[in-house]
Structures are given as structure tokens and as C-alpha cells.
Image 1 (cartoon, one colour):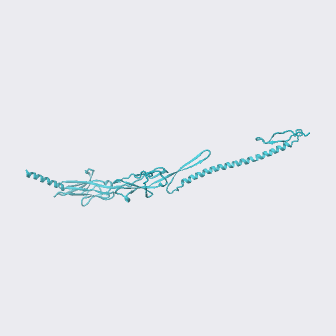
Image 2 (spheres, one colour):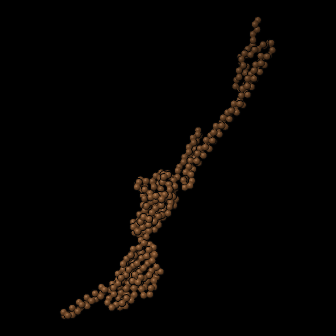
Image 3 (cartoon, rainbow, N blue to C red):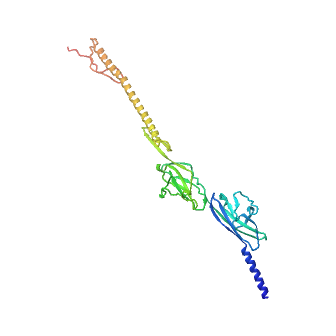
Length: 340
């Protein structure tokens, strides 16, 4: 009995030893998009056994091979993707790595004795997309709020965003002026100094500094409200015009247009004033001959009256006055008494 027990234990030991000598190990790799990756597969065969085939597969998260999509065979060199190949050591090489190459890869070892061993690990692909800032152009009234935004995409995270104005890093330390300055840039109380070209730079652990990705350039335009008020005896005229400022256009356009309107208004008022003065002058001239004519008629009437030679009545003129529109009205005309 003892000899039988010892034999069984020896057989189990041999099996365990043989099982431990037949192993496959995959080493992961981390690369950036566009670089070449190598997934290493090392293996140990049992004594006397010979490798028949090595096959690479894509695998899911728990390491289950996606049998319907083998990548490459060691014996034939057949591959499902021209960017996949095997090294002399049967390592999987992937050229010009793309984002969708990230994931698990499984190496399967098949011996001539029919034994199978496999292992898997992950290919980590680091990338950072070029950010896109919207809107492309933003016009904002003075003292209002402007906002630009972007959606950073990449791995690893976090992704840091730095905002740039006119090719200089924007100082966003003033939280009242810039309450948000990450993926969204918010500018409060916009003024003329905020006008300019904006962009952002995205960075993560794989893409820092000059390797960071710069966005498109967007433009912020400030809009000024110009108001001119003219007051007359009957009405008030208010002109409110918005003049957007743009690169290459004189910043005083709004002032020029406003002053033009004021000049036209003043000219109109002066024309009215001159017309009024001319009209009064003409009226005065037309009335002057009438006054002289009145005096002449009065004198003629006086002469006519005093020139009467009616001896019976012997009237005399004592008072001559103008009344209303009559040429001459005789009043207080009395008979002259004879000194007899």
C-alpha cells in the first residue's frame, strides 16, 4: 500500500511539473497614436514537445478570444490586417497604431502533442484629438457676457485646457472676469480690450507642452451702442445704432456716422431759422410802404379838408387820427366862430 501511494504521488508531481513548464505570457504595451506597438508572447514547452502553431487574437475584457477574428498565424503568416505582422520571436507587431487598435490581445500556443496554452494583455493607445472651439465668431455688446466652448477627447484623462488670446496665454486668475476657464471660457463684463482672436491648447499626460493640440482660431467682436439725442419744442429724436468692430475697419466708424447725423440735424434746424428770418424781413418790407401811404393819405385828407372854401360853414381841421384800417378819420371837427 505504501508503494502504491508513493507512486500516485510521484505521478501527480510529474503532471504538475509538466503543466507548469508549458506556459504562455503576454506583455502589454503603451504607445501613442501613429507609433508602432509590440505585444510580446513568451512560452515554455514541455520536454520533448514541439510548437505546432502560434495564433494571435483580439480578446474581450475577460480574455476570451474572439475566435471569429484571428489576427495572424505563425505557420502561414496569414493576417487579417496589413499593419499586423510577427517578429522572429513570434511577437505581434502593429505598425502606425490607431485608436481602435487599443484593447486586449491573446496569444495562443498549440503544440504537436495537442496541448494548448494562452495568455492575454492590453495594448494601451494614448491619443489626443485636436480641439474644436465654437462659435467661430461671436459678437457681444459691451458689458455683456461672452462664452466659447470645446469638447476635449483623448486618453489618458484628465485633459487640461489652456486658453490663448492673440497668441498669448490668457491670464484667467480673475474669477469675477473669468468664472469658467476649462472646457468653457466665460468672459464677464466684456469691454474693448477683450476683443481679439481666441484659441485653446489641450494637454494630457501623453501630450504636454508643444506636443499639446491647438484648436482652431475664433474671433470675439465687441459691439458698441451709439446714442444721439436732439430736443426740439415738439419732439425728441433718439438714434441708437450698433456698429460692430472688425479687423481692418476704422474703429471710429460709429462716431463718424453719428456725427454725420448730428450735422444733418443741425443743418436742418439752421435752414428753418434762416427761412424764418427771411420771411420776417420780407413782411417788414411789405408793410413799410403801407405806413408811408397812410401818412400821405392823411396829409392829403388834411389838405383837402382845410382847403375847402365854403364860407357859410367855414370849417376848420382840429384833429386828424388813424383809426383801425381806415385811411383817415376826422374827429372833433367844429365850426369856427366869427370874431364879430
